[in-house]
Image (cartoon, rainbow, N blue to C red; front, side):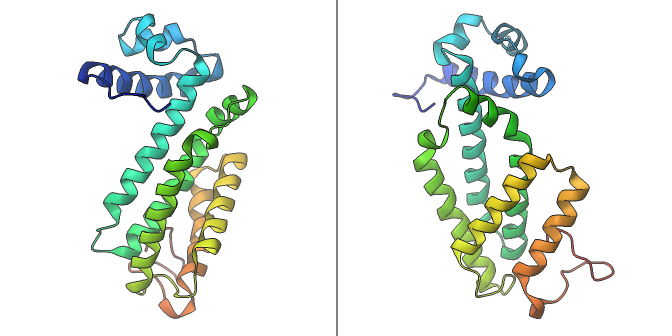
Length: 205
């Protein structure tokens, strides 16, 4: 959840450690993971967790928001890449990978009546803007077909994420499926990606 005022340096470090640890514990124990165990693993007092995350749902929501923020920051870093095509396809893949792993958290929040999207409207706009930057640069470099617009791209990305979430795609299936999608985004005139073998391209050029 967004903080109403900046955290002190030590509180910020505690928060980051709690979020990292909570993800690990949740991945291991599932939704039955206890706040006490998360506190133990993070080497902080239980009261320290509850000061920042008064409920387990608040902690789950903070994890989801932190993951989206990390994706936005990663996309910004890729926006200046010297290989715009590789940057575009790499980030598309990263978003789908993330969707595969966060379904449990999103389901838990939905079951608890928490609307994650409502708390991330500003962050979602940032995500769309940086994706558009990656798309534009890849098109200018000739690595994505020029007729692809944001509505089509977001529809493809949303569909891939939803399928990955529900199907819990393993890496081989994700790689093959995204390869087919990326072939369509490149278009027939772009030819195989550098290093492709046998005419079959992987999810990054």
